[in-house]
Length: 474
Image (cartoon, rainbow, N blue to C red; front, side, top):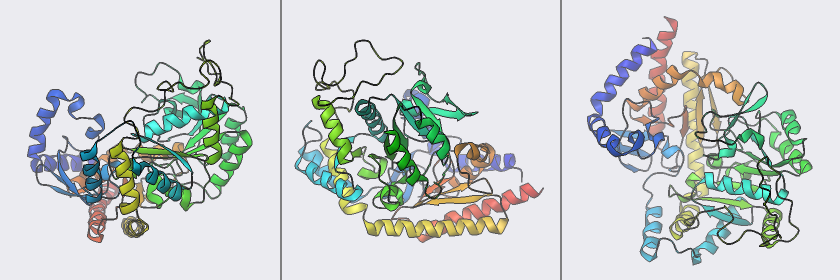
């Protein structure tokens, strides 16, 4: 069966099994731009928005009473499972006492100690999202180094941080068309280099104006791309030599282990960003820094040995360095953070997650489940002799429509460009009660994911592959 026919058949099947969602779509469109509270909710391979009813563990139910084995898990915030009573209890108890005070709670000291112990960095701050955390660290890196440029890897994911919306085309950093409404050319202060390319990184650092390298330990947005052996050791060496900070964004790779990929792989970043799952699905994120960077930040705010202000292309003539005028950022005027950052409910949720949910035992279950899933998917691919590969890091796996795992975004793009195949498999899985990340073929195993769910996912991919192989042979 040609993919176009398969998609038409599966589209009709979806419509027949989702009448309430289809009817509710009209009500959503009346007052929500794009027909949903947030436009990414429409990125699923479905003819209308799936309207959720509830989630429990690794199962999601929609308003048509369709149940799904959830391997998307909110694109990671629900990594440890939906509806966790530990989170509900912590949030409810804190909400009864007050949601936010613009003051720390007693629990804040405990959570700070838990973060330091688990991730190996002594000083922390909270935000509402990893995007905000990345923004904060970019600004601090520029402040303390006095340099304007950041380096990112082509195809990176760092939330909706404007500085990171660039791409590499024909060896040059170009603006990413996805950055809507931006009037400043981000390529003036951001350089993109290919992942796993040390020579390109050396060249980017050689100009002496790089404040920081911002990176995921493994790339997860432009398909899943793993680092080559010794890549990070060499990156750390070059960053230190160049006087650039290394910021690792563990928003997705937190699934690698209790301390994220940073701990699992023995990395030593200057700063770390952890979002999405750190509060068990409650909106919160954190960023941490080394003792040295923490001292530099606090010295900068106190006006002690300030670095020169970064000389960006649009620096204001009236810009002052730390120590001039107010001797550092005035209260409420640093441009970093929001009033709700560090709210008491978020702190409570982070504490419950670290103590009760993101345990070594939970990670062991997740990692074992992911190994089983990868083995099952590899068996399907081998059975049908498909030119696909499964890429795997921690509890996260992805089917790549390529015979070999790409080592950078440029090599990955042809695999991602197979839009019809991607759409067909996503819709096929939805109709068989399985959700994976809607953007590409990425799957996440939670500590509450069962072996039956893993087997159902592999069986659905097997069934699709059978039809796809027949179509390809025709």
